[in-house]
Image (cartoon, rainbow over all chains, first blue to last red; front, side, top):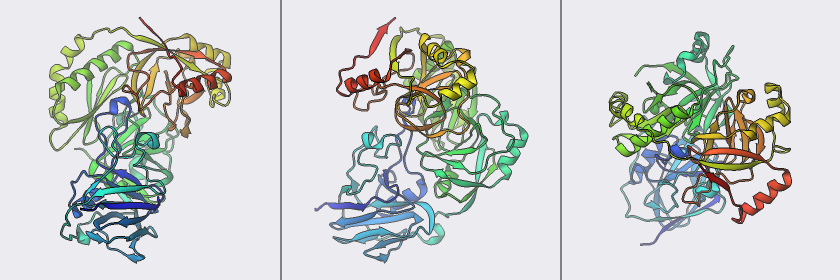
Length: 292
Length: 238
């Protein structure tokens, strides 16, 4: 059986290989990494009949230009970044047959921030500490293949075709530009003055330009915030909301550092974090306090 | 010990919130015990100065189950703390331009001269309390009170590899370029995290560290020696 190959003629803004991330090395300071929007990534893998945890491509706002050689199947989910095959718009959330020489490109970002491209079969990619996910720090050293560069190419050991499936619009994850997420009390919640907590849950924060896989800095600072004390550096988990000493909230995401020392006001529920992964600079985020 | 919920799939065990060698030894003992016991459902552990963060799979376990399990053996484990002998590692640091990015801020916060800051930073030995933040970042303490200064109000988007910084009563070295809010007073030419090595992190929790001042010329010489594997790290054992 012939192999299916991909060649990136353009890498896109930030295209990486991601899987479920590397768990169990956080005590050395190695971040978890892995797909930002787990739900969309899982659906892409399911559409091509791969394991839920198989490595796939995460594409950010400006998509890559990919040429295929050999026959294969792909699926694209998550953000709508106007995918086109050989210049014609292609359906998302659907198993798509690829012919030898087909060219996949992306256009205008319509909605959302991160699209997922799954390829049927086994994507041959070097792993580091049990995961193919691009390392957040020094990716060229730790995971040289996983941060997509110009001319990157991949071999996928092909499998027999799977039946064409599609996910109806009503069952796809909803992408919002304004989103209220559920937040549990963070470790230092009680150390925040009541007024700061009030504003935190009342405001709509816009996502600043400093928003990436490590974390989203939000554009508004909390008025009258003075850090009560220096937190002694302690473990960080994705979904943690830190308040910097200037009163600016930062939402920590999949590539977040493993520890930090800013006060932690809350933690976003895992399920809602997938939706946060689809917010882009300028979109609005609000918080709602919940008890588990 | 206090058990705190930390999102829907993690918990935080807070010890007495102090930078203290004995408390940190208890953290290391409990961390080792949890690694050995293989409690089901745990996905990762982050031992820190005086806390342990525990990631778990909320489909197979829960905050309450983990709390009960850990509570049942924690006290016993921490009574068996062994005082293993520590290494003393000397780390060369250049405290000159262009490396001393925040020296002026630190001088203002501490009301100390540059010379006094360097002398305080190089005359003490510090314990490595934890690795974290990014791969191989060693958190060390504790600083003499006179050197204490807050993190930057607005963290830098890029702190260079090797940068040596201060934050509160802690000092640390950035092993790779990363965003961060520590006040940078110098830079080491040493590679702190080398993923080709079997033990990739140059420093380990429990190590003792002393900084040693070098000038710019020495900085580049050491950098060159290390890149060809000819730099010999100064290490002594207790």
